Length: 242
Image 1 (cartoon, rainbow, N blue to C red):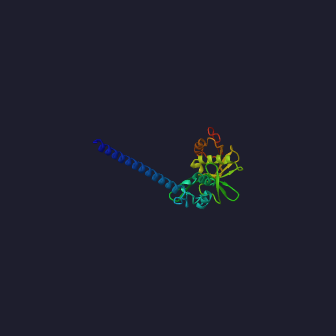
Image 2 (spheres, one colour):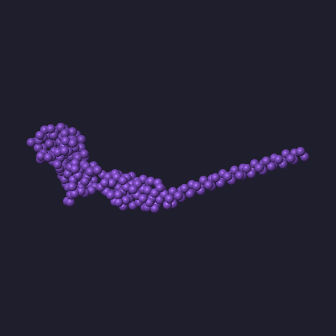
Image 3 (cartoon, rainbow, N blue to C red):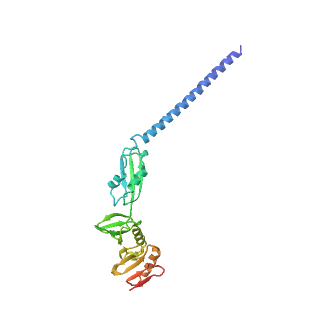
């Protein structure tokens, strides 16, 4: 009979322990369910609600273009949650604008899309029917102006030749300052016949755009000699006339 109280006590303790284990399991399940609900709620807020939707677009870095032109080209789908915006597609649309050399599109929480534009920089100008086209270092004519900006050299290029435009850009970029200060016009009838006209009527026969860095060094020294023609088309054997 003495064993019955001990058996009863053991049963009570076992039942109590089981209840505690059950409560702990219920608590863990409840915590897990709350965590899932919080995550699900966060996902909904970020990806589907209007709390973090694009409502404004800001544009920086424009000079040739206007902010309105960039915004129109970007076609940002306002009202779309920032997390679901295809920033690469927005950037690709902006890069279709000729004056744009590069663009970065970023999301700014809570509701802004920022478009940072890097425009092309003019290396020289090409005479056109109504004015001048500005051309960048890669030979791309990206905008037209009525007058040549100060410091830019004017070029005449035979036809609409993309290679010639790139070659002229290579030459202009390589020119030493002493020659740039005296340059009046660059003419390029073919890829091998680039000529630079100087103030006073002298000219520099540059030839092709190849070895432009070496030609630049040669002409910088050669200009100390008074002449009407400076020929650096073969930079290892330069000549002068007149």
